[in-house]
Length: 98
Image 1 (cartoon, helix red, strand yellow):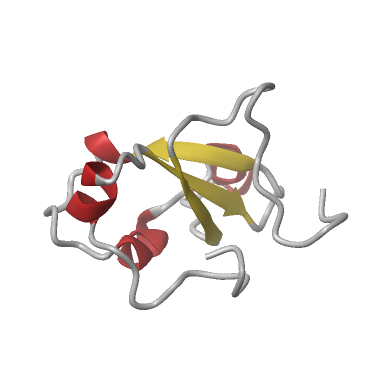
Image 2 (cartoon, helix red, strand yellow):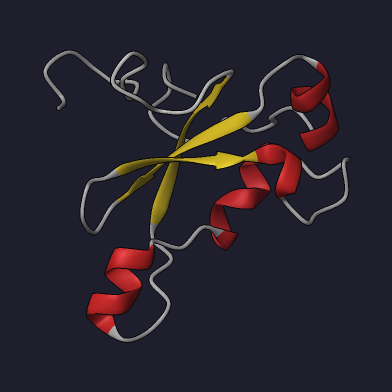
């Protein structure tokens, strides 16, 4: 996903990503440029759902509150084994992006 600067199509299925050890999906909001991780084991979709189809369901809480309607513009950045933290910073698409 990082190399092509967007969602990879075809992407692995939700069940395949979980079996491979990728428990989190990193998402970037296009409204406020924040990176967040979504736990894949709590996503309520069938396990054969491709990862790139989850992009249309991602909403940013901060932008939704500010705009007073569900804000849906987001990009899938990468599959991750850990959540974003100070020890594990967000992924960069290209050098100098932060």
